[in-house]
Image (cartoon, rainbow, N blue to C red; front, top):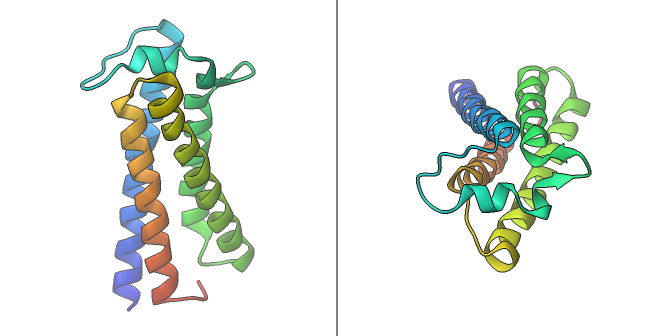
Length: 139
């Protein structure tokens, strides 16, 4: 049981690192207004009015989100309050990323493949966390 729990935690941390790298790439791309987009139109999405909250690019929020999740995953087994904070953080990330993806499809009418990959990562993080909590509901 402990072996499965460790594997899930490591998988979640690996996903966070991938998400962090994507967020860093998007942040740098935003600074230079240069996008490499395998599929879709990353420039349109990342230059839309929804790509920022005030002066803060969404990609910077992604960086903060993934770093926070990595930190919380690292210390979550020690303190129950951290597990609660991790649950809330992952859920907020899922809701907000869902909202942004819906905006891409319905309002912006363009898709950023990097944003979609980040959305998939956040979905997987939430699923893995649910499995992790099911294996050991206490820590």
